[in-house]
Picture 1 (cartoon, helix red, strand yellow):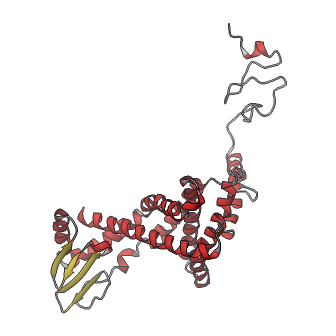
Picture 2 (picture 1 turned 120 degrees about the vertical axis):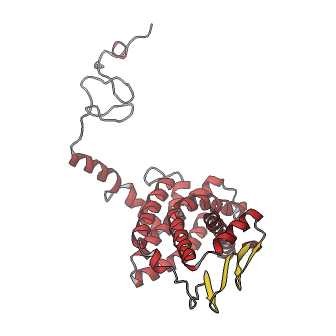
Length: 308
């Protein structure tokens, strides 16, 4: 026979904790001794609701500001804190990355809204765009791809396609032989789709970045998830720099640009504890591998957009 909590504990009241079911002693405490939730619950007022959010998350002593301080000014420190087990005082890596990346992408969308079409090069006989070139009247020179020999485009008005499947070549040929107005429309749509899918693309690139770290720092015997933690922190910093660049104030833009290059090297040096003569070539190898994966993912996305 199972006795109720009040029978086992004569001092317990008849109303247990609504969160975990533990019995309260008499007099009723302000907080549950088992789970820590308040014992007297009621719907908060709007002011109380805002105070709860601000006090727990964005207050001066809150985890968010403590996290941002170390993220922006101390390269690699957040990763070191996380690997050392000091995690409760900071925002978790994935949550931090999602928060900053969403804010950066929203800011990017707001700043570039309505400007994409205006920045598309006018396709006429005097155009000299790198993506689309028109020379000698109707002569067209367009190239897509180029990575690892995968190329397609028009050369002197003649379509060519190398290493792509035949079905994809046929679709590309139909798209690239459109009239000038149609090609301009395609370029506008491609830019808009690329902007809308930056977040999704980064979720593909993040695991790749962590994999390159795993290969380059194989001698450190660290788990893949530890490399992924560093990747999340570093990409969160890069997204923060994107927001600074969007302010379009020249001194701040210059500072953000320099930090984007220097910060990762210092962070690698601190987190992986290599000497500088070992850190620099590894950082360069990471740059090359990451640039290759970025180029491949974006080229694949561009091609899929054109042939869809």
